[in-house]
Length: 220
Ligand code: G3P
Image 1 (cartoon, rainbow, N blue to C red):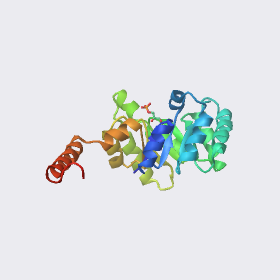
Image 2 (image 1 turned 60 degrees about the vertical axis):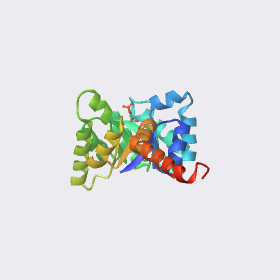
Image 3 (image 1 turned 135 degrees about the vertical axis):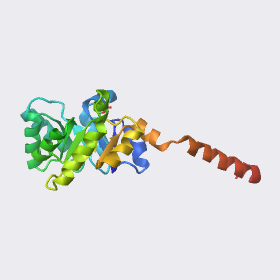
């Protein structure tokens, strides 16, 4: 399973990218709004940093023709990197069909059921994004949805969409998604740090340092 970072913050993207752990970036309108800059500016800057896919979402979510026009505009910011995120709906599926036929990669977002993922894949989406944290929030097991979609896609090799597990809230989600068969997990910066740190690692580093320094001195 690959990891993307789920943020529109340039500093967070740079730090994660410098660690060599992320293969792409996902943003959404809420994340872009937090940065207080235009989404075009932010997406263009992210694309200049990242070697992999940069997911930018359309703001117009209700009408296929508006989503198609905006999708083309977002894609043209950097055709080598940009993936256009389109929300799941009947209009969204129409937009995915048209954009995919033009060779524009799409990510169908706000997926909360296996059938929605199946429809998005059939419409031509390159990626589907099930939101597991938001399902957990309403008492439905989000990871089970990832597993079900992965099973369906494995049973039907003519479905080519990759699964991006989204709405990841903690490191346990990441492990569970890897086991469930997600192709990618898009992980917030805070969760990346929770994945890195472990109290026993910290203690181990301190003990190695103090044992060494007791014998050889701190100057080494
Ligand atoms: O990018 C979509 C997604 O990851 C949202 O996460 O935590 O707002 O449900 P969250």
